[in-house]
Length: 174
Image (spheres, rainbow, N blue to C red):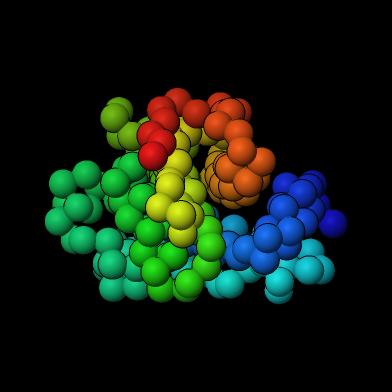
């Protein structure tokens, strides 16, 4: 069992306590968050499912991210991460959604959005969301692991009633 299971080990009882569920909407992590959320026994009680929306077209068709939003802001942006999470809530009926969109590298980075730039959003059926921008150092594998772990931790913070942050560069809350 990998160290990546530790946040999920903490998440399962927090969600079970109130019969809540989570879904995952992923881009640069390619399903890694869904895998992480289902690795431990008991995950079937808290995980409603997920979607890998790796392309802009799938962000639009599967979770209703407006194409114009992607054109204006780029796929790696706060508005798109928020729309992904809110679309995931709507499509799955989960209590909470976690979305991840970013640039895992080694290519694709720019001065404005370097490799390692990742937006993670938590949206909940109570109408709240928390979207944060990270710039993770390291290679592709590390960036993807850091993104998935931080996504789960973002939901844990919400469930514990905390607004704290581990290492965000920018933050948008509602």
